[in-house]
Figure 1 (cartoon, rainbow, N blue to C red):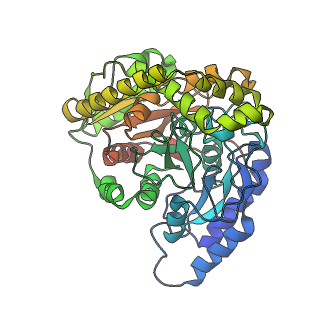
Figure 2: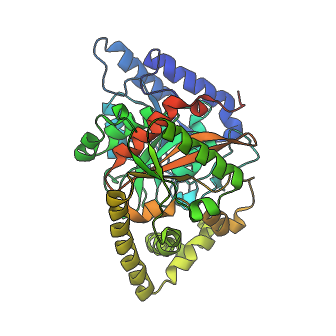
Figure 3: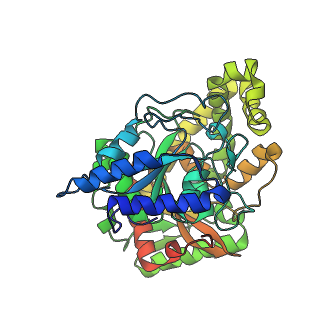
Amino acid sequence: MNDAEGPGTALARTEACLDRIARLDPALRAFIAVGADSARAAARTLDAARGAPAGPLHGLPVAIKDCIDVAGVPTTNGSSFYGHAVAATDAPVVRRLRQAGAVILGKTNMHELAYGGTTQNAFFGACRNPWDTARIPGGSSGGSAVGGAPGLAEAALGSDTGSSIRMPAAFCGVAGLRPSAGTVPADGVLPVSPPHDIVGPMARTVAAVARIQTVIADPGPAAALAGALDRDVAGLRLAVPDDFFFDEADPPVAAAVMAAARVLEQRGARLVSVAIPAAAEAQAQLMPVLFADAASFHRERIETRPEGFSAGVLARLRPGLDMRAVDYARSLRWLEAWRLRVAAFFRDEADAMLTPSVPVVAPEAVDDANLTAVTSRISRFAWAWSAAGAPALSVPCGFVDGLPVGLQVAAGPGDGATGVAIGHRYQEATGWHLIAPPVG
């Protein structure tokens, strides 16, 4: 992926992506549907309007996760249930991309119903990691991440409920942002757990991610990002917690993230060893809520057409039907207190926190029968920020055994600008994001 101000005409950039899709996607399976003709037509229209650019994303070829509506194209949600449902209109995030001059390339592969972390899709093909096709790309926005690293698209939209942008971004070596809760419209997007779902951008550079986020966000949050790419990190308090975020990470992954923290320290940031008590509990408190919300949405299908689900997703959905109201309420009370605790931490203790995005590099592809355990393990470090409604950014920060490692930068709810500034300055000082995978 190039920056949102990449070189060349809109058509030339679009053709370059379409060529890579034709050559590489049969092995990677990043896309469910490619709209080559419509993409070329949109690019030609942009090029024909000589003069001022159509908008801040003029000519940017973008891929869309297939749980987000694109007019005239089926929204499959990676599932057997939705393949015949053609979207009548663009989701607001897609409409905003077009208005800003982006070219929509097609719909990307995803974990079925956005409900898993491997993107080994039983209906549209197993999506593969471009750094090693024997490994998973993560999920559920796996196709969006896979498309970016080898340039099948210059940018993509994903969605994130528990970890679904940051985890695949880390595994595939691109940047991915989970924005603050409520900053991006959710219309035209398949729900998992509506209070925790959010659409966000993925691109090779944090600069491109920031520009896309400014376009898709509602006006107030978009304005809050203004100037983020020009901010310095000198004087910022960056928490590097001495807790489970590093204790449970593979040592080489933890070492790569600590090296990234030292780069930011050299640029004037101040590293502070401070943690948020109970961060390790967030996954156990939020996951049952997500299970219940997802099961509620799919209840009629679970009860009447269970054969329409893959075995792994069905096994992960069923526990949500059994959750008791008192347990759901108890988790909600914990989450309310957690959000207050996180807000206070980023007000009083640190400006941002640095952790590994995921505890390991991309695992080898395995049978989805153990989906719940696999997803729980690899998403472990993302849940604290999902539970808080806080922004979190994954940025490439190195390699272990030839596989990418992600640095996660979290900040206070509503403060997406600080994480973007940190990630951008880190990329200015390093070149990890410039290394392309060994395909094509």
